[in-house]
Image (cartoon, rainbow, N blue to C red; front, top):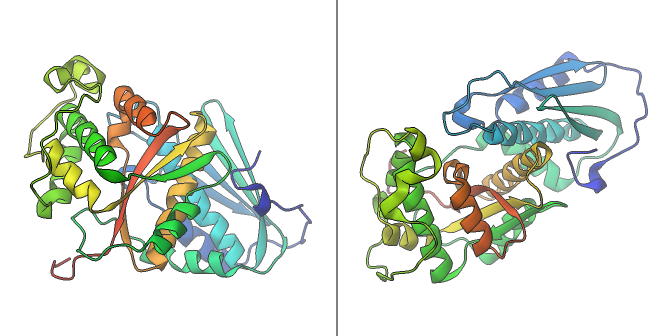
Length: 325
């Protein structure tokens, strides 16, 4: 079983040499720069001969809301994608095998034989060190449809779907979901939403739409029911969030199934989309906290035609030239 599209597999031909010291440094640095849940880097990397083994560290403490380890495996998928791009940048075909045993994921990458790196792979590899998480509101410059298509395509592979939030109704539905989740989850997520909407446009239509989430009973379900609600910074309301979503590019990354292997695939897609965007001058951030709530995940799945399981939300745009970073 491979963690990558079929076209990137290759037959192993033992080259008879081990990774050089320079190659080890490049591979290690690429994995080090992968995004991870709260910067925990929940993986280990072992390099020997012409093989690299990335192992999920199931014992790494998780955020309170990531009880199933979903974000940890998404993080491992992003690290795996960086590892594969690094192997390819060194001129090796990458043979990838992903296995789940005892609830933990292990990915083996073999430098199978010499192969020319593609322009796309090289461009994304070079973007690894430039990728950053950008949480504030973006500048006013719109992302062109060509670039949006490239980012969505980067996030789409067999078993993984990238889908833009489109139109007022979808934006309003997403705004209500984020508003609901912010009232259930703890302060870190609430602060993230507040930063996002610091420059949010106002005046969105005050529509009353039933998205199946009862805001008045938000502590009766999900994580709020087990006491994880903490401090309460200002949270933008649903209409303000919807207005922000409608003027940005918000991508939902979903998988056809919801097993550990699918979480790894989602992480690969997240990193490919992020690196594609970075290489084209965009900035981005990822949000998974709302999807820890089963009721939010289910409603979003329904909104997106029920064909796949939402795993991550990503925002893309250009930085605000008037904002100091």
